[in-house]
Amino acid sequence: MSTPILEVKGLKKYFDIRGGVFGKKVGDVKAVDDVSFTVNRGEILGLVGESGCGKSTTGKALLRLVEPTDGEVIFEDENILDLSKEQMRRLRKDMQIVFQDPYASLNPRHTVEKIISEPLITHGVESSKEQKERVKELLEVVGLEADHASRYPHQFSGGQRQRIGIARALANNPKLIVCDEPVSALDVSVQSQILNLMEELRDKYHLTYIFIAHDLSVVKHISDRVGVMYLGGLVELTTKDQLYESPKHPYTQALLSAVPVADPDYEVDRVILEGDVPSPSNPPSGCPFHTRCPMAMDVCKEVKPEFREIEDQHFVACHLYE
Image (cartoon, rainbow, N blue to C red; front, side, top):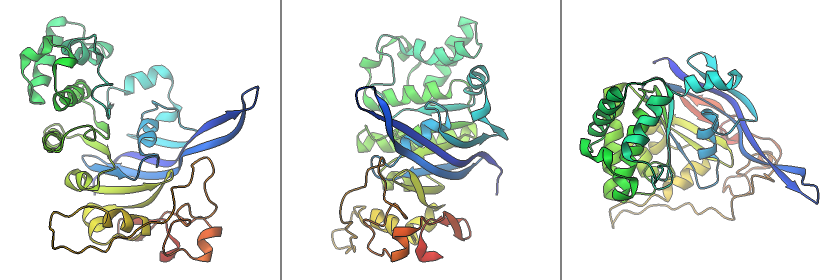
């Protein structure tokens, strides 16, 4: 087993709910509630779950793009939540993010060259000749032409823009990249190109990815291990093969049963979940999933299950396995 590059322990991110005339705090939205996992060097860890389960907030909290409420994020043996702004700025060279929307994440007033060379300038590459060469090299690495550098974002398609976003993330040779639903805004044919590109780059530059998505087939294609999130917490985490062949948590089973299969004769037992996802500002007591779980027991309403290892490298938060 390779060494972990990132260890997350008890990560929480609560957003204040303010109300009344004076805008007093009246509650919390528990966007991320006690999440722990490790990411090994060179692996791709997928994070999946339905909209609003806290995947993107987890990814942003790991990079301190939103400040975590509590917990530890240990990157290469250093808890980044203890770092000052200046130390954090230096560390950003090693930790990058590819955003979900390639239309919103690129400045429409800047040329591609300016967009990609910005991180180089921030981290001390002052010679404009070096910047130009690096921009040209990065554009070729992500499958674009060197002469695209003088164009603006609106002159590219969605897939090409996402490639520019990836080139920007790679500018300073980072070690860890958080990919926040990087293909969800793209056509299916383009999705596969971007996913294949990301895998090639992982092998070429020894990158480590945290890949956030809600599409289980995309995650299956690219991930080594997969974590399933529900209402701000992890409910299951294991290798890709284990998860898709023998999911343990009732929520994971329901998610996987909803994945379409490209065979008209294949009969699948759909698990239909009753009711709606509870609000993260008022989560249910006990297991957060018990209100919709087809296998809920009395203990599920009272006691929150512990997220623990039930088989080799297979972690589940469920009373069925205690």
